[in-house]
Image (cartoon, rainbow, N blue to C red):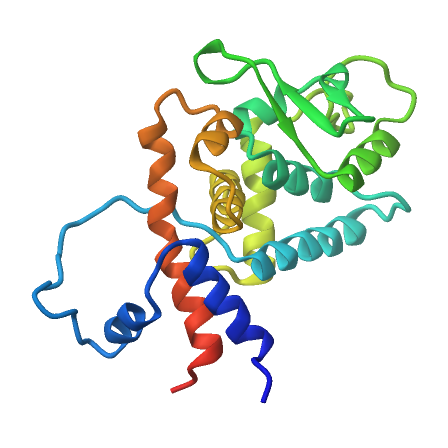
Length: 231
């Protein structure tokens, strides 16, 4: 007998986040641990999408873009969604990115207009960096994402892109720029990135704001549990 991939992932998740599988089993069967009645305190939770939903959103945006204006290289809509997700930038930060803020070689973005006027460096994948380099072409300055009118995109237009892809993919709740930010933060935390590092990447002034992302981990645990225990 060999342990299934799903079970290994589930056990790995529990070990990484110091969650007892027994406690999870008790939770799913409505059996609270002895001497510990369930608390019903209301806590703030960030909404997020699972990785497969992010992939669907990118694929859906690509299909929408190519139906409007076929292109060989990755359409702007797709690049915008990927950049929002990978960099975890706020939508206001993304629209203010300049060409010179992208370091192609290191695959790093410089967020110069962060909340509170603070700057920070955020990594992106080398694949996205290469696609952005192709998209930028010979431009040496100006907005990183440029509209057909040769102007930078507005936050409202970015929100519209997310709304359209949500309708295309039939997401409920709908996808928003902030949910893309929350999603990658949750995924990174689930993969073991320390909260202190995540705080720097997100540009949070107070680490207590970042710790809210940890409250989404039980939802990830539930997803892993359901893959193993199907009843």
